[in-house]
Length: 73
Image (tube, rainbow, N blue to C red):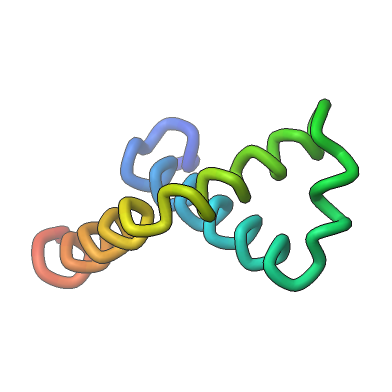
């Protein structure tokens, strides 16, 4: 099943994108800061979410890990 039709997979992809964009911005801020509109602007927004809401993103990742390890089939 595609990640677009499975809600858990979609959340996993979004969380990984948030973490990846925040990580890239921490090492190379010029790559994402110069493009704040269009497709690259989406990655800039994901990086901002990862920076500003990092405790919530971390809690979401921990919850997903617990669900994958102990609850899911």
